[in-house]
Length: 577
Ligand code: ATP
Ligand code: MG
Image (cartoon, rainbow, N blue to C red; front, side):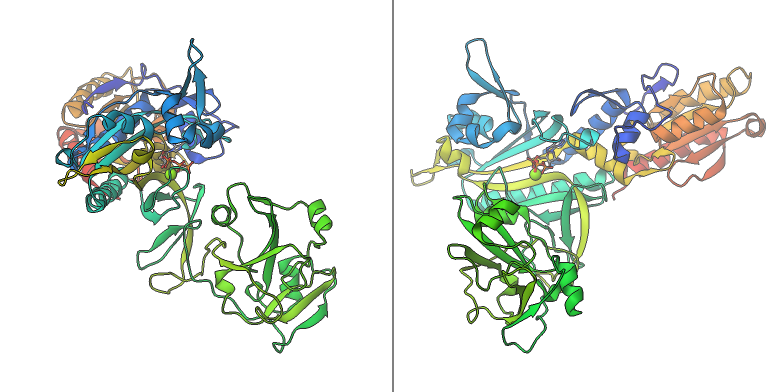
């Protein structure tokens, strides 16, 4: 993008809002609406106004620079995707209602691409045929469509959004690993060049499938992802983390003993009744696994079952039992446990409990608990599985230290796909010995529009957005305090184009507005630097230079302000979070 340009505020199409829009929960959503950056066209579908579009293009350029830098080649695949390809991969049925499906005039199935593994694999299957042509990494920056169940938070979770998606094709696992590692480093650089404090976290491989995967999480309370991280560098999505869980032994002598526990229907009340921590209790959950068999699962009392881990353990269609179903099976809400389970109910427990020999558990009898229940003696666990979500204080699987918990915004994700799609679509190559193998693939996505929202989540204050220089729509605004004045206006008119020439794109606030209104708008739109031209300072040959992030104002000689700002912009573009 041309970086030096100038626009007059009087002509800038950025309809600002004075009031906070009621529908916006997240600060990024609110500020983008208020600063006139975006408008909703339909649920989860947004128009990007000029300021937003400039930021999006800058993020895209950073992504491009990093992708080109590791030898990936930009291209563009069609959004409109023939259903046949999705039938071939088996995802037409599997992907579910998130896939935007349409029919053409001949009643043929199409979808609007939510991701492009099928399309790109189809593209290369007839042309990448020899090991000599490999590896190849292709990428595109394109609008994607996902009919999200709950589109929300503005650009954070849209039904139409911009993504960079990349795909690699290798002849060997080593080659895939190399590209995957390069991608990981490039992703980390994209985040930090965009001003994002982000962590690479081990991820569940979910819908796309495959083996290794890392997500790049921008740390923010507004994030929808839960993660745990350690000072040693380990970080993982709570749903993917296999961590150490400290469990306390329950009370009692170790002998099985039934205790009357009136009004103890919750973990908190049981813990309080026995005067111990919740980690000394055991939580029992009743569910039907995917074939529909009844299961009781026991986990440490101070943890929750993680839905993604549960899907792995019990199948995608598993569901918790309703109160009526509990009664039907002879189970009692509030006093479920592993001892004396009704016949036909499968018993599983979290691996964290395997070495614990004295469990405080419901007695499967209303108003009673057992203390001292012991696996192997008082009940049999049919399977030990990892189903608890990791949380603050659990132990790092790498170094054993207690983990921190945080929320994150998933900005990007990289996957080692292996041969899942190449096998399904018959994309093969011939090796040195003339043998045919499926291509070994990786896929790599960054949500460009989500990154923009994440940047705002990390860079804002009570007055508005505080853009990092590298992604600011304009780096500087020039604010003449009065417009009609015969010294101020000419000075501003002279400085603004020079600033633009000097390397910083600028806005000249030529509106006949009070200074307060101009300051408020420049702050709201988040331009990193403001050059304020007022009568008193100009009389001494000076203007004020305000730094948006620190709020600091300094007086600068009029002749020096262009160089000063150019230097700040240059340094800002090189800054890393
Ligand atoms: P999520 O778990 O948040 O739904 P995902 O894991 O399904 O995302 P990927 O398939 O990994 O998403 O897509 C790559 C990137 O595209 C994500 O890391 C995210 O930045 C972005 N992205 C995915 N879904 C959306 C969406 N609905 N709106 C905006 N960006 C999105
Ligand atoms: Mg993802």
